[in-house]
Length: 463
Image 1 (tube, rainbow, N blue to C red):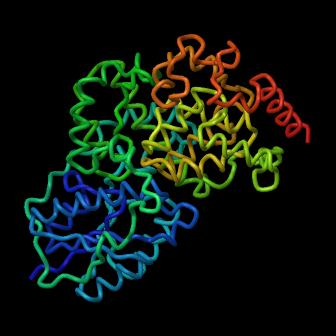
Image 2 (spheres, rainbow, N blue to C red):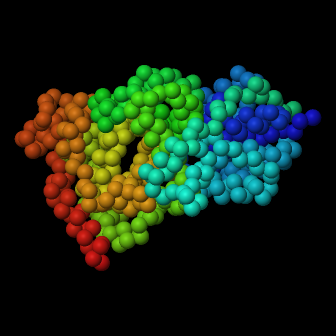
C-alpha cells in the first residue's frame, strides 16, 4: 500500500499549481494540515486583518477539498510538534511543503528535517529564491540588477495541474473547528468594510485575475491615481497563496504592453523581497544601515506629543487629506492604494519623525496582504534605512502629491468631512481657508516637518 503523505499548508492555500500538494498526491493518501502557530512568529503573528482573511481562505479551501472527498486538518500550537503528532498518529514519514523564507518558518523547516523526510518544493515565487545570482555567484542586494537578471531567466517553471485525485487515509486525525479559533472580530466586529470590499479564496483570486486581464494594459498610465483605482488587487490572494505568481505570469505571457511589463516588475519585487529576508532575516526589526540606529526618532513610548501624532496618523486625523484618506481606507478595507502607501509611510517617517518600525507594525495588523518580506522591504526603502532604499533627504510632499495624482475623488470617498470641497481646495483646505469644523488642522506644517527631519538626519551624520 502507498504510504500516507502529509502536506503542510501555510501561505499556499490553493489546489491548482501547488507543487507540494501535487507531488504528495502522486505518492499516496494525502493529509493536508494547517497549523495556526502564533508563538513561532512572535511580533509577526498574524494581525487582525490577516486573521480575518485567513479564516475565510481556510473555509474556502476546506470546501474545495470536500468536493474532492478530502479534508484539511486544523491544529493550533507549535507547528513542528503538531505535525510530529499527526505523523505519529498516521505512520507518515514524509512531509511535503512549499518553501517559506520567513525566519520562523525556516527554523521550523530545519527542525522538521531532523525528524522526517521533508520534501520542500518551490511554489510561491516566480523563481526559486536564491537561484538568481550575480556573476560571482553571490546574492543580489539591489533590486534593479536583480530584476534584470530575473528577466533573463524567465519563463518560470511550468504550471502544476490540480491533482487528478486526492486519496484519503484509512482514518483521519483529529482536527480543530475553524470557528473555535476566533479569527473573526466580534467585540467589536470591525470587519463590515472588509467584508464588502473583498471576495476571498482561490476562485475569487482567479475571478480577479480575469478582471485584471481587461485592465493590465493601462497599468503604467493609471497605477498612480487612487481615484481611478486601476490596480490588480491581487496582493492578498498572492500573499495567502490562493493564486501563484507563476499562474499570473503564464496568464499574461503573451502580453507585450508596457502595463504588463510594469506589473511583471512588481511580481519580481516580491521575489526580491524574499531574497532580502533570506539574507537578512531580521529585516522587519533592524535597520540595514546601522548609522540610522543613531537617528533621534521621536519615541511614542516616552514622548506624549509623539504618541498623539502616531495615533492621529493611525486614525487618519493628521490634517493632510490624502494621508488621512489612505489611513482610513486601510482601516475600513484592510488595504491601501500603493501610491498612497508611499505617501502615508513617508509622512510617518519624515513629517512625524517616528521610527518606521511603528508603521511596519501598524500595517502588519491592519493589512490583509501584510507580508513579512514585502512590508519590511517597502518600509526600509521609504525610510532610507534599507539595503536598497530611497534617500532619507528625499522628502515626499503629500499636498503636492495629492494634486499631482488627482486624489480629489479618493479623498471625498474616505474623508467625508471634505466631500463638498472642490479642487484645488480639497487637497489643502487649511491653506485655502476652507477647513471644515469637523476636520482637524495640520498636526505639523510641511516646511517645519521637512526642516526637522533634515536636522535630525544631519545630526545623525555628524554624530
